Image (cartoon, one colour):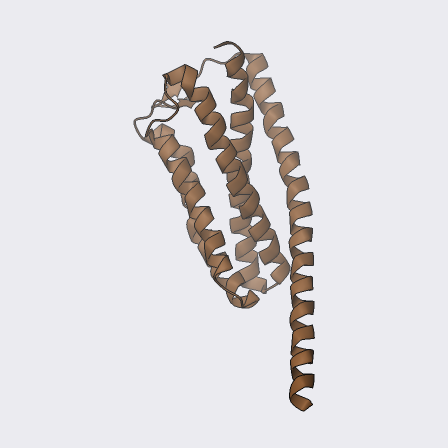
Length: 203
């Protein structure tokens, strides 16, 4: 496939990061429901945000790869379709959060949604193996197209996945810290408004 094959390493790495991020969001959501710490909600929301971003990147890079491979930018293949469904599931999560002002209520309902919504991740991962799919699979499978990969290709893919994992940890730390600082500012502004409102009423 020439140079276009190089998209594979970015595509797989981005797909791995997207699913990893959603898995982390689900686990942290469970921790939040048990402990009620809003820091866990900030981490879960940040992980979901990163996962959604890289799910979109996975879809777009897959389209670039599909054009010379399948002679089309898009086909309603099970893997492609479930990937889009997964991305829209997490997009709906942010719409849910934006519709709630109470941080406790937002965190509780958001955590429940992330736990339930995680079912789209294994469905997406196994879709090319369990359903009739033209999407290639890296490892052996009873269905789907098996990719012919050499040892250097596996090594490059492994390094790509490792690099994307490090990138995820870095982004998650930065985004979680930023989200918590944003919440502190909102809390301070809300407190200031309450004080001003009280002074006006007393006056």
